[in-house]
Image (cartoon, rainbow over all chains, first blue to last red; front, top):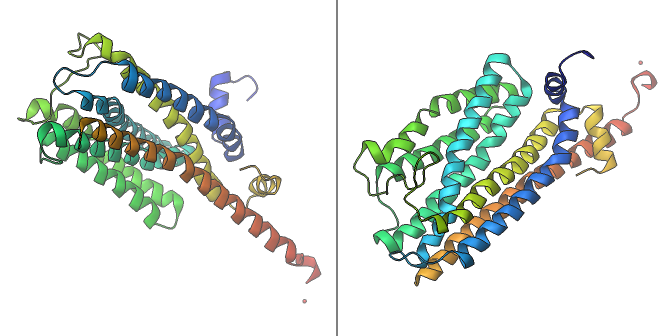
Length: 253
Length: 53
């Protein structure tokens, strides 16, 4: 073990529940704080620095939370499916925990996506909701997240529960390209792609910086939340072990 | 409603989600540690196996 590649050794150590608990306790607050600071800067830019859109007026400022939340809803589902695949193939307990910790965060970002899209849609489209391909497929994603959460909590044995819910996450991953290309494949009320990582965006460059900050900030926030939620699940699975008792008696919340 | 009110409503939804996402795991951790303390207290109160025929 001592002559093992240090990165590989760290991954092995991370698989140890007490080691992961220490790691999560240390780094989760950093994720939250960095996420809050970067998103705070992004929100300031979105509300006070960027000019109002010439057609949409101030209502376009909603997109600074709608777009990062939508991207997070897809990214988190992809990550959940990846962790689930690793957990199913190699039976790594930590990956089960991380996969299941992704679900409520992804569901929350999906709710924000649907809610903010709806709030933007009312003044712009004249309706809160439309059974448009993009909106409907995003709603299906929310149901998949809720299905994963429900399945995980419906089975008493945590490992069996994680395997069943992980399988649903893997099947559900087929929704990601459907959501992504729904505006291309079908005649959609939802606008097409505005922001491109490669190639020219149709959004004015003066409006982009707050969006970039929000996209980065949501990633940091997610990391903090993922570690905190995984720590809670790890403690539940290890209940009764000596290391948990020692932490509980030391009062390390 | 004015455009500005729609914007405030959307940002309020986001702030609520972040607040929940911060508080929920902390409550879950506190609950697990409370349960661990209760379990430890129960075990301490139980006589050791050799002291019990």
